[in-house]
Image (cartoon, rainbow, N blue to C red):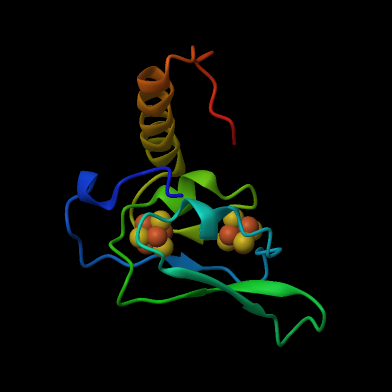
Length: 109
Ligand code: SF4
Ligand code: SF4
């Protein structure tokens, strides 16, 4: 299930970038990416660990992954994390509103 619908974002030529040293392979971004652009793969630098692989052709540059990443490992060049976190929070709040759940004003990330 995707938290955010890809059609809510304008098409963009900007693609997410990854700081592989920060990524711990938690896969939060994999589940939240609206286009399925992220894949969890083996980390060649750290045997036994996972890391993200970005499928650039599928990425729309929406920034949802940046807003969700607890390690600040994945990012959209030129956009601040606070902007993106508020974007994710707004999307989640809308979903909660649709199903009748109240929102406390804090992002869950
Ligand atoms: S959310 Fe961040 S730390 Fe977790 S897998 Fe994605 S990029 Fe890596
Ligand atoms: S910016 Fe992140 S969440 Fe958005 S499409 Fe690209 S990889 Fe997925």
